[in-house]
Amino acid sequence: MRFSRFSAALVALAAFASSGGVHAVRHPLPIAEVIKLSKSGAAPEQVIARIKDSATTFALRGSDFPKLKAAGVSDPVLDYLQQSFVDELDLQTRYWMLGEGLGGCASCYPQPVDLTTMQSGYGRVKATPPGRYAAGKPAGTPEWVPYPPAKTSGERLSVDQILELARSGMPEAKLAQRIRTAQLTDVIGVGTPSTIRSHPLAGLGGAQLAKLKHQGVPNHALDALQGRFLALFIETERLRYQNLGKGPMR
Image (cartoon, rainbow, N blue to C red; front, side, top):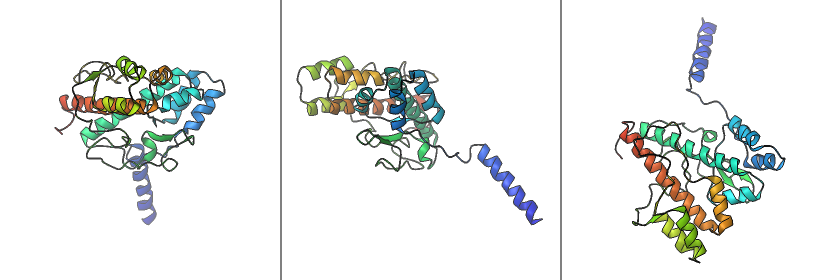
């Protein structure tokens, strides 16, 4: 009888795990491996496939993209890294509005990155591990993303205008501050908050961020641009799920 009960418990646990109640152990792909594979001459499609197979997303700052570009990562891979990051934040925003989440599975969230040391992942890069539930923002949102977004100053800025301001000689700190309070135009996906779409589009691409650095936008401004873009994106998606009846009023 004791053996039968033990066997039944094992069966029940296996069923619970297979139903998604227990997250399988995942081993995120190191960012150094992405760079190594890119330098090896592998086609962009092969590099992207390797990242997909590992189910890894990376929490990349704006200034990380030109660094990756300089390290040999191709434009299609840069765009994939940004889009997969945005997709993951969209998923976490939906979970947040539903009161759900991925629990303490640190490997299931966008992995922190430090390109100075070529390290990535919780435990290797200094970052607060994602908790089971974040009351003020989606779980796994990087600390450097200023969410909730700062109140808009009323200024509307496009990426082209930001480039013009950088080229005009505006001090880096002043440019970054203007970006942090501006309403960014033409970068928050496609459609209105009520538009139904399977994957929101990242209107600010990884290759675009790398190119902006080459064109003269400084790192501090690139980081501010990525942070503002992601904060506004999360807010847009929060409103979308709210309007679709997927979550409560904040």
